Image (cartoon, rainbow, N blue to C red; front, side, top):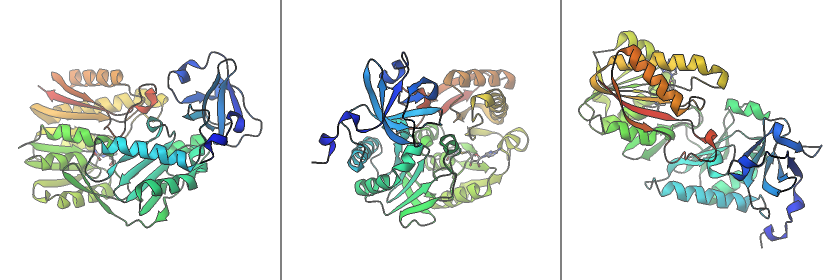
Length: 402
Ligand code: SAH
């Protein structure tokens, strides 16, 4: 017996929702906002485990309560007898892993846990074969840290775990921003991962975010299908995912561009790892300027533009849309007539509709007819929970420029 059966529903402190605020949660959303809470325990610890109730309708879910965060409650389970312990985490991790390996069967390289979409709010885990990289952005997950580490090791046999605490979102939960920490075993500086047909070095400590952008893996494959025999520009290349995938699908020539020198060095190492050095060149600098003015060696057949999130919050949206427009006008003009632009945006606040509107304006200002061939989203290891629009952020439009 694991103790679950001995726990009664009243074992966790009660948080009560205001009347008429239960609809979204009943529809499968996992958050209650601070203005929707009627009563909560007076001595509340940020991230403490609690039960969420509706005054008339009863139990809604068990999860994390945070007295000072806009996201006041994050639901972990709607089972009122479920104890939140190591075996709970083990089950969640096993389920998430089975869902990843069903789609990506080669080795273990994927986003293993994508927060709310895996009913583990505020927890991100990337798996690089034997090494894991965790990012926690919820105070409650930080409280569960020792249990999470034990459960991850139990399920995966991981030989090393990096715990990253450098996401700006942590500040919203009153969590400190800190340096990456090796919390289990040992982690080498660079790990080599094998995904689809490519090989990549990943640095889970020093790399951007958690080290590698798995979210674009399916989109890289999609763009590669247009790249055989073509001259390709991978703008905002980071570690070279789009360009290398195109190169492995027979691109004739690839130019990698990024403003960050460490990113370009990683891209260069990855290009060599995949045997693509002879057809690759590297340019450091602002990708928009490159597209507008420098355009090394004439027009491209295929261009990927994958900038960082321009709209970090709603108030940045108007400026962000202008910046996306400037970038996309430049890309549409720099590509050959009949060529392909894969335009990405990872800003959650730019909805699909706003994104398409922005592309429409860009096409008009670039004086090009543009066809939308594919409108894509996050890779299958970053699934979007339909009941939670907040889990969708990536758009990738594959456009043909006439
Ligand atoms: N396409 C990459 C991910 C890109 S992340 C992949 O598939 O893995 C965004 C990248 O844009 C980062 O590497 C960042 O260094 C770079 N960047 C940010 N501003 C830039 C600019 N103005 N010009 C060129 N690169 C820029």
